Length: 124
Image (cartoon, rainbow, N blue to C red):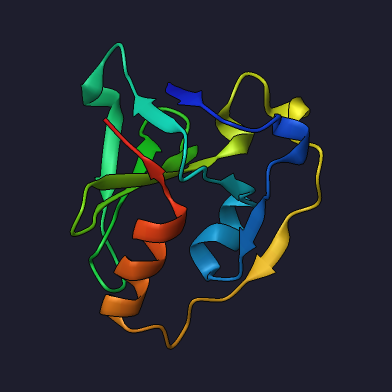
C-alpha cells in the first residue's frame, strides 16, 4: 500500500505515461509531488518484489501476488525519492487528468537522478 501526502488536489495532479515497454504493459499513470511525501507499506513484505532494470538507479515495487506495479523508489544525492502508479491507489478515480506521454530513452544516469531529485516525491 502506498500512503501519499500531496500538496495538490489529485484532480490537478500531473500524470505521466512512460513509453517504455514495462510501463506500457502496466498501463501506468504515475505521479509525484516534490513537496509532498510517500510511504510505501505492506502487511506482508514477502509479497512485495523489487525489480531493478535499465540504468539500475531505481527499484520498481511490484506486488508478487497480483503483479501490480506500485511505484518506483530511488536514491538521489539529497534523499530517497519515489513515483507512484495512481492505478494502484484506493482513490485512483480522483486522478482525472489524462497522462502526458514521456520518454526517458537516451537520458544519462546523472540526468535521470537530477530529474528525480527535482520532481519525484520524498519517500520514507
